[in-house]
Image (cartoon, rainbow, N blue to C red; front, side, top):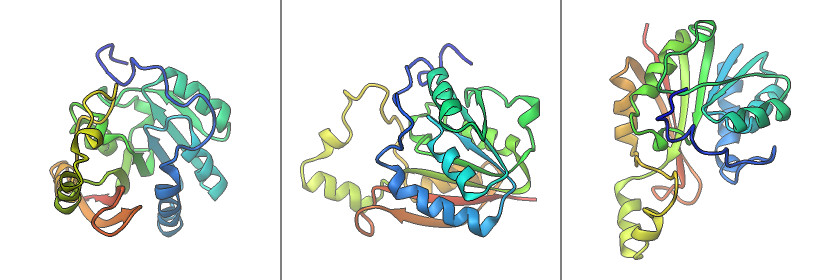
Length: 212
């Protein structure tokens, strides 16, 4: 794990096994996708305290694994979900050999907005997937109408606060997230806005498939 990784330097935020408030928005559609895709092996990249891994195990996924740059997060995940395997790993480093080409599906929830070098994420996902595998990514939604509404309501400084330690450093739209993964050899499958109202969504889910 790189000592320059700003996320790994932070003590893990979740000190319990509970889900974050965002889980209520993206966990149900992720589990719906798992039912549709029927993956055997799933990797949660940026697994945090293992709450999503626990939901995947309860859903009946046979091989669940989680990766996170936070050592304290991984320790919590191990306690939270003994039915999965976990590894302390930074997205800025190549995957260990035993995790390469092993997964039918990679899930990354609310991670890419924290990365100073976001192209590392699709690179690691590509390393992890089996041929033709899929990836599901969620990140806070930032489209034109939502940003306009934030400005008109005079909420820009609070919504994009520069004083939030270890907060979001990248703000993604549907187009930019699609570009990120298509440039890395993925094909777009679908988009889903989650939370609040259409075009003012709280977060977004995008699914991609690794090209043959």
